[in-house]
Length: 358
Image 1 (cartoon, rainbow, N blue to C red):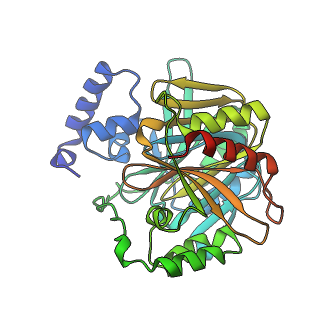
Image 2: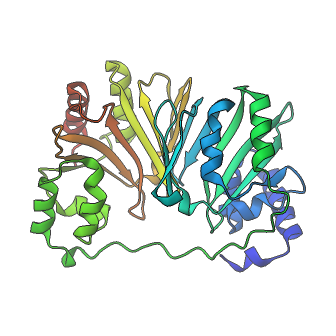
């Protein structure tokens, strides 16, 4: 963090207040970036409305079933993914390091990255909005769960009674590490990579394959060849991003899709059809009941169509990467394990490639 992060808390709070007067709609994540601190540091300058949770986050998520509908939010710097639904049988695995829910709420959680959690109460001017917010050891916001009008208030309050921590001390945040550098392509055995890629039987084995070949995902896409990867470009009008195009196609054809968005602590997934699409400046939005997506496509530098073999046939994805080479959004055709990919999705991707092939 910059030296600004070590200034007295009151000074940071005052500077945040000044920033909000200049930019009343500024989100806390963006305010933290402008002030050179983590989101958690900024959140903790509030005099009230922030109460710590016990560090039992896996158990807390397992107990979410009875609460009813909540809105869950996962984001990275380029994409915000929101789903409103009910948790169903969240399970913890990997000796507590991982967890998942599969259903209307579909998440893969890396609990070893979750260091701090808080109940946050915000006065919106009309109501008090409550959320559970979870952060990394660096103060990065990983995931948020919002109480909605459909949430069972008694069950929500009972949950809070079990997990609020009245003895918690102030967090000791670690310095943010430098971003991992890309692998030097000259050090990669390209023939071995291509051979291993062609032998994939399950898309879930993809990360292990990359690790075995000592290559990061973004570099692998550049090296594996056109049989498996197509790089896309914006339209000639320089208006339409590949995301705009594929969402418009999926809406028109009623092709069900899956949208994955993640950060170091979680991957959040939506599966279904999209309808209400809206472009607002750099942001491409899906504004459907139960699912909202907000993608700042100006910050998504590279788009690829990626194909991987599996025992169910070829699996095709559209992947977006930021300027650091980090994947920030992935789209698939809606598919259950053991079933082949839908022909509808394959056709939509082929149309996309024909119009936006680099």
